[in-house]
Length: 420
Image (cartoon, rainbow, N blue to C red; front, side, top):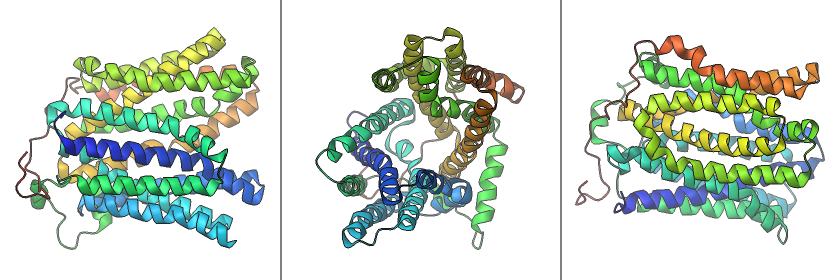
C-alpha cells in the first residue's frame, strides 16, 4: 500500500474534503441563526440534514450498486460544490432565505449519503485484503483529524472574513476531492459485478429488499447493525449532554470545557494507531470489547464525579469510538460481496443512525423529568455497557475469528495497461 499512489490520492482528497465539510457544518447553523434570530432554525438545519438517511438510505444504497461508483462520487462532489457556492452568491444578491438553507442542507446530505455508499467500495478496491484494516485506520484517522480541525479553521476564517467564505472554502475542497478521484486509475466496480447486476426491470425497492435480506441472513452483519443501533441509542445522548453534565454536575468553566474537547481530539486521533495490534483479537471480538469498554468508562462518569476523570474519559471513548468505526467497517467490507457494497453501507448507516434522535429525545426527557444528570448518565452508561449482553443471544454459533476475505476480483481499470 505504501507504493500505491491510488490509495494516497484517495486518502488526501477525502481528508481535505472533510476539512471543508466540518468547517461548513460549523458555520451553516450560524448563518441560519443570523438570518432569522430563531433557535428553532438551528434545529431545522439539524433535522433536514438527518432526514435523508431514513427517507432515502435504503434506495440510494441500491442505486449506487447499479452505477459506476467512482463516477457517481465525482458527480456528487461537483454538485455539492455548486450547492455550497449558491448560498454566498444569493446572499450577495440579497435573495438568501432560510428555506434555501434547508434545501441546500437536505440535498447536500442526500448527496453525502450516495457518496459514502459508493465510497464503501473504495478502500477494498485500492488495497489488498491483508492491508484493509491498516488502510481503513489511516483513512479514518485522517478524516477524524479533519473533522476536529474544521471548526477551528472556520473560526479562524470568521475573524477576518464573512461566513460565506467558509462555504466557498468547502466548495473548493469538494473540487479537490473530485480531482483526486479522477486521478485514481482503479475502478471501484469489480469486473465480477457484471455477473451480479440487478435483473432487467428489477425496481430499486426490490434491490433494496434484496440487500436487507442479505444482511438479515448474514448473522455477523446482522449482529453488527443491531449492536451499533442499540449502542447509539445510549451513547449519542452522552455526547449531546456532556457540556451540561460538566458545567452543572462538575462546575466546569468554559476553559475547562475547551480542554475537554482538546484532549478528546487527541484521543480520537492517537488511540486508533494501535488498532493494528488489537486486530489479533479478531475484528468481531474487538468490536464487542470496544462496545463494552466505552459503556464501562461512561458508567463511571457519575460514580467518579471528577472533572479530571471526565476529561480522560472523553479522550478514551473518542479513541475507542474511532476504533469501533475501523473494526466494524473493515469487518463489513470483508463479509460483503462487492455487488452489495452500496446496499450494506447505506443500510447499516440508515438503521444504526435512525435511532439517534430517539435516544436524544428519550434521555433528554428523562434528564428533564428526573432533574438529575448524574442518574441520567448512569442509566446511559449502563445501557452502553450492556449492549454486548443485549445482543449476546444473537452471537450464539458465530465465530469471533476474522472472517476469510472476499475473493480477490479483477477490477475494471481506467487504465487498461495497469495491472494490480
